[in-house]
Length: 350
Image (cartoon, rainbow, N blue to C red; front, side, top):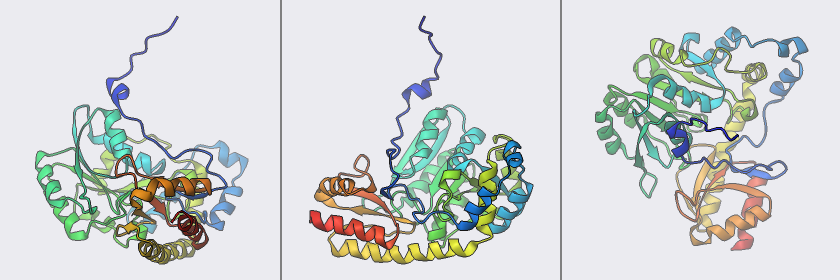
């Protein structure tokens, strides 16, 4: 007998999220904004020293939470740990959004905002960045008058790599009188701009953080939500009791004890980002102002041929032809050797 399962309408109607393909090991991975150098030696050592008894226990969070709070310059009651940056975003839907609720986003942006909104059955108001990838500030301020439940803003934005300045964010927070502003700072380490210090000034401000980028712990899935104590207490109600695994906790603490590794990686990325952007520009490629550990490039009509050649050479980039056009790709800032291989492959197509 074939059962008839009562699936929610929102699940049946939602669009699919096309994650990068599997089988990426052994290739030059410039498609997922990972730290291509890998995590710190301290993190690997901490994981290797976990005992069988520790792995058999449910995680304990007090010590790790205190250390992570200190790293971000907040109090323990102002940070909640999550299972990666994705859960740090999903929890806003569980806390604030009901079926039919209104949420606001600006596209192109991180597709998980739309993903979770569709699952929740929310009404999505999607504004657009301009063709020059400029943030639509005035349209956002106008849309906030409609009192959406949540406004999601990635800063720097993914995939454009562009940055919304402090003054604009301040205007948004003042206009969002009935809206939770979820500021996704996955890439803020590479921009030098973070609004974490503002959480005691704006009760509607929440900051989503991740240890997948600068810390190189994407495989362990550790994120966090930072916000005002009383507002964050509401968000905690939507989190499970054991959201983060023990290995992620010990690796994160060990990484923070070796912060020079993170600082060195961030410094290297900024230097290589400027160099790589200029190398592409001299080759006639349009590059948008990058503020993350990646950049958005427009290869124009040659894009499809370039991407096929890169793939044959084992170089993976995040093609954005579906939402931006056939020549667009988001490229992670890897090592100098990795980026030089990409440039050589591109030159062969030219």
